[in-house]
Length: 290
Image (cartoon, rainbow, N blue to C red; front, side, top):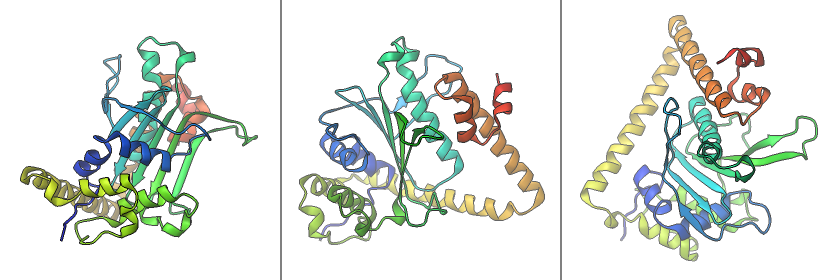
């Protein structure tokens, strides 16, 4: 009987979606809100590290980055736990991917849409208990039907996913079941998952027998690091009830807000009001940043 590894681990996730274009195409077409008739046909993998032209700006790394024949970019992130810092990093990565071509000399009119798909193995939006799929784009504050769809960020809360909530999108159900049902305790895979060739191939790619001892060791270390980080975050939260730690955390959060706002302001893509909404700073504070 086959043994399986959890596809959410860094190494297995990248093996499935970072090395097999046909699987990534099926996955993205199933989970992204692409316009009708604009499904992804072909993909080209791009370096996951985005190196800025300006040496003063920091590099960013995502799990999988690619573009299609129309020039649209797609960023895919697998995150095991949710923090505000992760949300800000997703926003920064998305804006950076959108702006990099212009930084390298291309005309603004030639910039192409960027989609970021962030899969979170945690509860990110507790205020929305009945929704696991969240799509963000720039929308007119008064006329919601008017949008700027050059940048779209999609967050999927895996713990909230239930197959019966998306019956109209079979492939989305199959891929999300693959991510949520297959793990180190799996000994028999539901036959329905194996009926689709792409999902069946993904299942075969996470069979334990397909990995070397060194890769299995690396995966174990990955889960150890996830466990330690979760513990650290939990302890930090509990200890944060003390006044001194609370003040320290507030200062750290503000420093991250300011850093993110500076980076977004330098890019020149978002308005001051949009940066304020993304970071929590006031427009007055953002206008004072240099």
